[in-house]
Image (cartoon, rainbow, N blue to C red; front, side, top):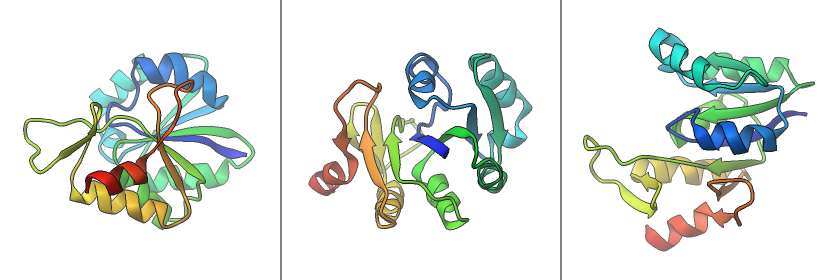
Length: 162
């Protein structure tokens, strides 16, 4: 079965993930694929504290996560990446997925050139290019804050605003 849910969310693990998405995913593993978190002990500690004990947490670099997923095809995996660029990199390394839930992409004070797609999603041209690159591989990209919301087609929204 492998990847049951893929989410782009720069917050990685937070309340919505813990209380809504983990149960919805029915996953055995929660894989955080992030080169920064994979080497930062403080981030790892915070992520481990935030993750419920009902799921096995793996915090790995992008390439290690691709290998982990390919070696756990029998298991269900909920994959979270920080941004669209990281997901596209993983797909270029061989990750195969069918759909992506676009969660949160924050607007920070240090970032310029970002446009608001929705109140919780701010993208720059690199994000747009990466999302279109992901979609060009036949991947459905939708926006839902929680599982019971009606999905919004992310590429349609991008095409209207960009």
